[in-house]
Image (tube, rainbow, N blue to C red; front, side, top):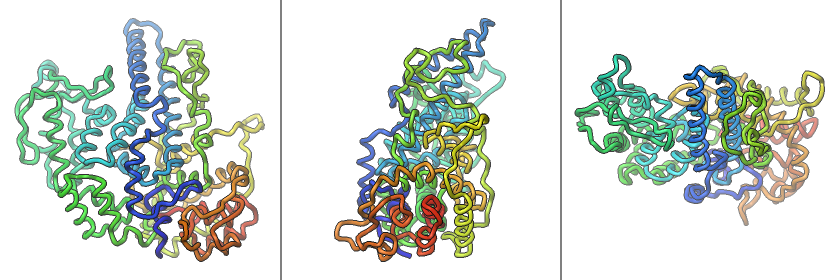
Length: 585
């Protein structure tokens, strides 16, 4: 099956079609997105980069005050809980903003690359309370501005960011023969950082490095720590192991310059041929197929060497692969990808997604004991511009792992597609009709913004935003996610979404297929869906229009038929969102 380049660009290299977005006709247009998107800051952190840095400085100062209360034997529990709640509420709002960013940005390829690199250079907000404030900043300033530069720059930015130093315990690493190390009987260098940088971020598993290489690199990196006042990497010479260190056959002598050794070893790892091949394979597997074409991988590695790791040049080589624009459906969408795709398909706006979470935030202040139960960001100082309070149970403590299913074997096998399609039809028909949530008193509950609903569903599906369970990040393998249990939850989400958005969609008119270029002939099935020959025209809540708006020429005849023959509007809209092709790219 071959799709138009515009459809393939949106579905394989973006987060799916969105009614208001202009079509992306080819690889050159995808690559131009990277430069255009670089000039636009993301929606998170909500205070902006400098605002979040000030929030962190204030937070650390207040934490010190709480610690002083504890040391003095004075009550501190209410203040401690209040600061935890402050960080938690800001994190939840940032998660909604992260979802809105992916769902509303016209730069789908840039957004997908941001998610790819975020998962590659994994950190987790579950590491500590302060990480809930730091992780959104990490993505916004260490990853997004550098995904269209050289890999060595990206590697240095993420490796020396406070989020990575905290997540991989580098901030606590002490050389055993350093000034501090000699005074302590316990502790020492921590190998987590060195190991994960080699194994996950650069060389890859089983590529010839040894435990001694890990040990030597960990000693070389001692002294790196986290400067809370600067909200940046710091260097403490009193923690640094003296001497020389041999990593992968190269000797590094301890430099008096604070970050020189760390920068040198990271640059060498970035230029190692094993790193080039490891990451080229990951890019191919993420975007095209889990069975990489070795000729394409070789070409990507060659370009990497020629350009010193210029990532847009590597991306271009990937997009020029023979398989880059053929055989859609090779990958099952991850939970985040699926939920964001549904939001794009129904045309959800930033306000739809963020709601109250998009309001300006006030500074962090010390919660008073009598405010501990109800404090929300900005309200403690009387601004009233904080987020709506949410019960602590809103965010699952840990997301359930999706049920395992047999490997999908690349594109979904016909039998598997039939099973999923049948389950979707049966589930959608049985769930048709709006459902108003009820509270224990039997009264309708006020609806949460779509963003809050979305991140709860993403977590339920097993991929909580910014909260992977380990340094390897979330699995990118289709067979990890493809299961009946996963589809059941996706059906439930699709039902909830269309019930909430159908009325709004009914007031919108689709005049032309989002993938149809000027002077381009309409897809062969457009007349079947809309009754016209020039693309889907009419009410966007009409299932016959929606299926083409959301899938264009990717829509199978079975999906078009089932959506058109659904017993009611909500069921018809759901048929598209739970169809086999909508769940794959």
